[in-house]
Amino acid sequence: MRILFISTHNVACGIADYNSSMMKAASSSHDCDIEVLPQNTPISKSELRKVADRARKYDAVVIQHEWSFVGYNTISRYDATRFLLMSLRKNRIPTAIIMHSQFVDVPRSRGLMKYFGERVFRVPLVMEINKSPKLKLFVHNKPSLDNLVGRGIKSGKVELIPFPHQERRKFESKRSSSDFVTLLMFGFVSAYKGYETALSALRLLPDNFRLVIAGAQHPNAMQDLTYENILGFIRSGLWNSHRRLPEIFSQFNLQESQKFSKRVILRGHLSYDEIAGEIAAADIVLAPYFAEDAPAGSAAVEWPISLGKPTIVSAVQTFEDYIKAKCVISVTPGAPHHLAKAISDLAESRVEMERLSSSALKYARENSVEAVTNRILSVVERQKT
Image (cartoon, rainbow, N blue to C red; front, side, top):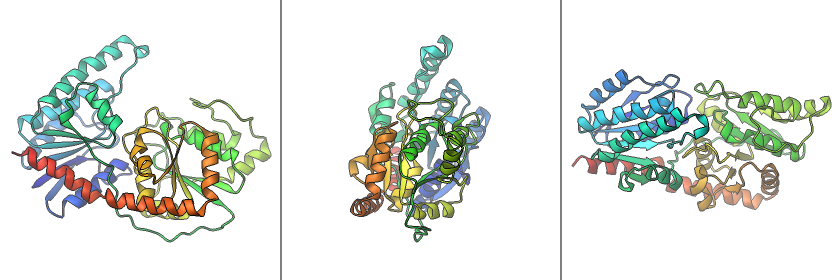
């Protein structure tokens, strides 16, 4: 088949990385091209029309869908997605959409116009999805599937697939001192990822535990104050804005601030090789996501699982498959005492560290990007008939 992939590309973006690995896997038996979506500015409707016209030259289309790629707000995102799918349907092009974000209900507290507007524009999108005979949606966990079906999309239009895992370049551990236990969080710095929980847990741990934060602010979320809050916490020991956790600490004095600042290392954006190097250098990777706004999947955990690094996650929908496979340790979201204990217990158990590493590599092999890609494309091929 000749396949057109529609995605962000060659940018610091987990979805772009996801799509590149899928294209590489598909290229072993198909001819693949890419239509690049802008990362920082949603694509316009006129550009979407050009994308649909270009797609006529292909046997199938695979779309990496995230709401921010196609609009500035809920209404424009629904309308743009409906327009693209309608254009592809009229051109009779078999289409697969990997849904990286869910429908989000707008609460009444944000105003009746937004509340009813979301529902008014969602209905035509759902109707378009249901009546497109050559369209299939793919999601990475059951809550995401339930989210779509619960808003009217026919269950037969949605298929559950595991998050694909790449074969990553492994680096030898470069730990500088066995006296330290190095914790790592990486990826774009966003509020839902639980930095408030991780930093609070670090205050509860002995001084030989340190946290490396590899990543910086998302270019599409420059008003997100999470990075500012991280800097403030390092200085004061307190989370200043949009606090989600109860205040359990007093403010640092000058000596405490200087001491804690040496335990938190900010790396900023990293290249792929640098990310793999940081994972190799770490003892434990953390992903203590909050339940609210947790995504369908996360490259921030796919990386360490693929590299066999012991990982602690929160019990949210993003990590359900890993938790069921027992290849991670799970803790309650927003629970710094629980997280600190899990970190301490894991750091003291070499046996458990080795078990997690072995289980993670096994899970990555069983859910390789090649296997997941072949499964999606086999569905797409059936849509051609």
